[in-house]
Image (cartoon, rainbow, N blue to C red):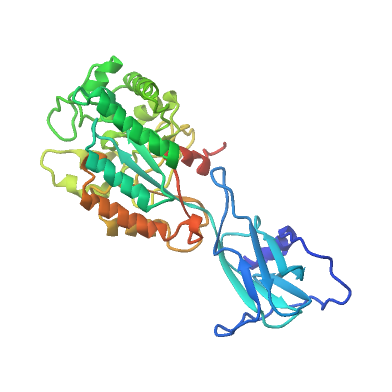
Length: 437
């Protein structure tokens, strides 16, 4: 990193008063850091512990701006990682503004010294890092959710002010005959309120319930089911069992229902049971979706491996075999949903690498988060996904994800505690662009 500093010095621009003839010369070597127990007559304000490297989704924190005030001094010099980068004169404090665009990811030190002193009065340490994007989603597996489930989600938002959610809404809210029009409107009002006030996203989740599939003009299948020999409701039927033209009809019908009820046209998606296939992705592309989130961390579904007669674990193990705790977003190959290879699809696959609270504890979610972010600066943007099902969002499941989010909040960029940025699923392609775009 230090070998780059000769180039970096040229890129670090500081607005300074021109040097006066009476100024002390700039020392040829950097000062020593202050002793840990040393006190200084100078005080330093401003500055951050974390400076994010921006992308098409978020702006970068590209300027380190500090003000040093204290005893009479003629100049204050700033040294970045041992190289002199700035000199400031007193103007109601010594104002230093260092441009960081060319500074590489990692830990850096800025030493401040007055009047050419060989010992600095301040050692400003900071991390330059790419973002750690965290998505939190919920899968609408049924047409309705009880009021207590909505209230827990209200608490989740209230307890984590920087949180944004991606609500994978099921279109069967509007086709299930057991859900009244008044109840459907209540759910619409609830989810759109969070979209409009908190910036949440309304995405799409499809279990191929017959009450929805038939309204799309598609003949409903009852097999193959991942839970039963046959499922007369269609709920547990693998979505990928439908053909691409049938899926396109279903997606068009879902978009029609969403728009008619004020939800807008969805652009992110997760298949019921994570049962997406290449045909599902192709249909999603046709429908204008930009993010697909069915890549399943199947090893964390071990509960299903012990369910007699069920094949959900086995199907996901076979179809999402490479996906694990640290899998990152990629653009699947047209011919292989698991391959990140040309020719790429236009839809981003954002693996569900942290899974849902039904299957993982708080400790597991925090452990997986730690595998994706170990506390040090990230050399490339990363993504971590967790979530829940509203239908069974019990108090125990609420505590699981609430505690996990508390641990994640300890690294929020918005509070200068780390590189974590909460994101919506459909925003991820801006942070993880398609190769060649």
